[in-house]
Image (cartoon, rainbow, N blue to C red; front, side, top):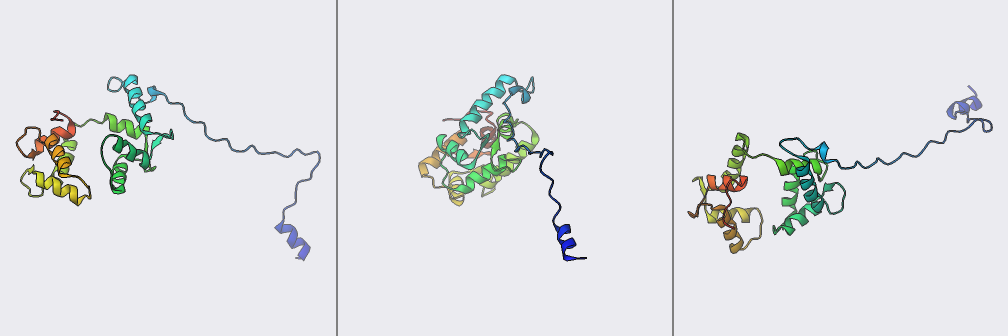
Length: 197
């Protein structure tokens, strides 16, 4: 094969210019942003369109930049606006990891709606709350003492004053017996009873 034939094989012939119209491909269009429709999320009679709209209003408050997802910085700001100090990024990313079911790096509206409307009355939830309670119950006595709560806060790296820990403890000790029993803890977590503020 000659050098000229070889070079022709490497470079395909260019289309002739003239009478042939060249197709100018259109640049790709950005995806159209989906308009929010509460009816897409409503599941009557358990979740009405009006309830979806209320949850959407709350979501939009947290989603400060309007991106459609609550990112780690927005989550931190939401906690701090609620009076929850977040000294460590680890806490924010643990919460995000629990709620971000599609691993997108943020909490989208569907995940937020699931959180806001989750039912906490089933057996599995009670077992999950029992596991969390057991983490705090260092002495395995079936109750959490003030000292145990303080120790857990320190082990988690939370910089809380004794007054803050005492306030948390009093809020959880629904029957005011000086201990947080599993029933106290369960009722607080499921808001079946409202404790002292």
